[in-house]
Length: 314
Image (cartoon, rainbow, N blue to C red; front, side):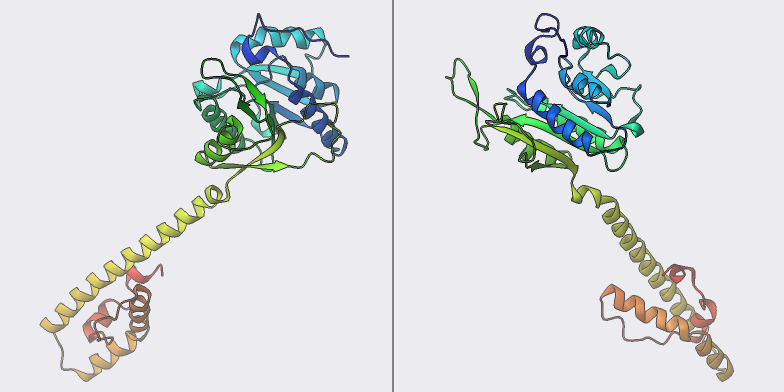
């Protein structure tokens, strides 16, 4: 059995507690580990006492356990007590600082997990920092990384003077988990999907309000580069049309000023201008306007712009 010391004096607050959600998530990951032959490298956010990280290490995973710097002393002590220093790396990471650790091999990470990361936060600061951190993980790690969070919905059943946060199966705006999933994640281009826990034997835990969530990049954010590319192409096409109009106006003025009476020149110009005339017509149709009614370029315009640069890229 793993040994770990309470860290209330060293870490404080929620970091010094081994939550039942951590034990439940350990069972979920162990079940997934048994169905996965590949080596799993797990990044844990807000590891606290290190129970979950050590449970995964015993199960054969390589774990990068992260938490605030003030928690590192207690975390390393627990890891060393269980002689798991070769499987668990302890890395300080303060989400609120918006500074990412520079000693993590992001490409090696296959899973990112966290338990009870959203608890009593009433003002959204922790939730926003966590959402921003998850966005960083999904951006920097390999494609296909799995992000799983075990969170418990709680409601304040106390008075205005003394809050009492009790687990609840209600999922609404009164819960910090609801605000995190429904508000903070979308603001950072992410969404969470609640997964079924029926296949896992979690009956020995208090499952009231407990939920397993997988976090993904929003499809709208994933398609943003493609949308920007489409807009850029449309702007380029508009530029081509405007440039063509200027060329056409200049050519028409030159044709009026220096028109020729030689029929052979006119025939030659018309022959050279056949393809160009079609291109002009296509541009008018693309723009959606009615055009100026004159789709026959002057002989001099055809001769000068038989292969004009503005339409070369269309």
